[in-house]
Image (cartoon, rainbow, N blue to C red; front, side, top):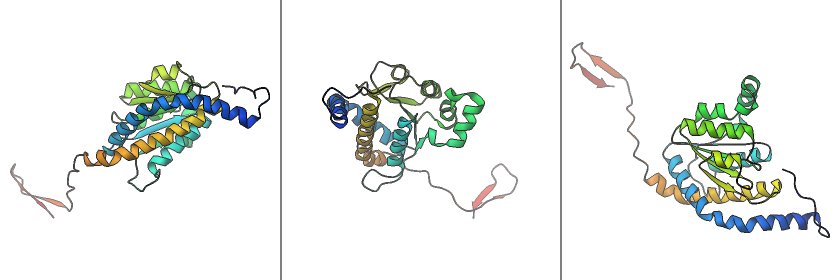
Length: 226
């Protein structure tokens, strides 16, 4: 998606900030969506699920930024959360692309790693990338909940996912910059919801340690834990 050229009489920075400001105001309407996503993501991750994320180019960098915030931390220390940037698995990425075609590089990983308790988040400025569309379909088939960060909607990726945060700007740079804003806000809501999510998590089944010794051959034989 090509960025518009500078406006008449404005500097490059002034024009960029003008385009950014124009798209920033509508982003305020995404507050409830990001809050709900953050709450759901916190509960799924606290319950043992994971977040799978993918993008191309600048959106790949944005996706990896998100996973870093979750596996690491946004501000305060907390337990690590399971989040995987699929494009960062370079050996798998190149092998899949070579053997199955570039459109399958994310979808095959979704089928390998995704479980019904997981969430798949796909990032694209255009919403038309074939490998992300294929991944979205694979996610739905595998039972994952599929979300998207995109540029202006409607677009094919938004239609392929259950819910979408769409940035209303024709400038891909602005879209990516506001995806980063949305990423930080999403992580903030995850952190806010996480304590309650962890408290609601079922208690883990005690792990039995030691060696079990079976005595006798009868059906009611005795089992002793060493």
